[in-house]
Structure formats: C-alpha cells, structure tokens
Length: 179
Image (cartoon, rainbow, N blue to C red; front, side):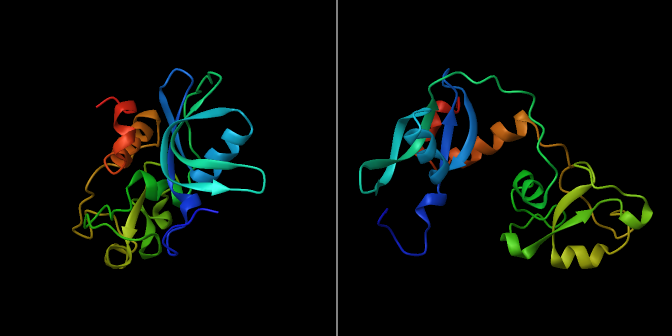
C-alpha cells in the first residue's frame, strides 16, 4: 500500500503512457499502470512518489510508463459520455467560462432536444447549473448567451492537448510531450 495523505487516493493519480516509440498515447491511473507493469507489458520510464507493496514484491509508483511492444493507434473515437464531455471541456462551463467540480456541472444541449438537438459531440457542452437554468429550452442566442468555444469531437489532437495541460503539473512528463 502507498503511504500518503489520507484524502488522496494514490492509485488514481495520472500516469502518462508512451508507445514503444516514446510517443505519448494515453493517460491512465496508477492502478492500471501497475497492472501493465506486473504483466510485463510496460516498463517504468519515470517514477512518481511512493511505493506499492504486496506480499511478494515492492514497486515504485510510476509517473510515466512505456509499452514494450509498439501499438498501432487507430483513429481515436471516444464514446459520447458525460465524463468525456467534461474532460474535453476541461470541467469548465462553456457559457460563463468558470471551472467547476464534476458534481457542479451538467451537460447542455446547445440546440435543445425539444428542438431536434441530438446527443452529439457538436451539440453537448459542459455547463454549470446556473447557466443551464438561465439558458433553459432556448438557443444560446435567444438566451443572450455565447459559447466560449465551439464544441468539437474528441480526437487525437484533443487528447494530446489535454496530456500537455496535465503535463504542466507533472514536471517529469514534459520531455515526452514535445514542448
């Protein structure tokens, strides 16, 4: 077990995953990274803080891992979900541009469902409760509200951009994120 401040679940900390070619391809939790390490599918490139102990072994908590075999990365299409929309929008209300916790955000249909709006990447945005109530069943222009940025599908560029933002807080990720 990792010994750390009790409020922080160290197994949920982010770990940068590199392909065998050192190309950044994903961010996973420490727990998933440890599974890849134990199965012999990855190696640790950068250690994080702390160690994980089991009856038979002790491992450094990784911060960056590299897959041992090259994986062809198909065109990334993520499922539309609340979690993925909030990640894409960086937990920021797309109307007032304030950042919120997950529980304080809703998903807003830019074109309301009652007006034929669908559940698509281009029609769903993160929205705080106050802005969602203010907009109601109207188009943003009718509610005199403006989107901070046009919603787009989650793609490889979006994924890399998010990895770079996370890398701003992870000093040992930067050399892998092509700054």
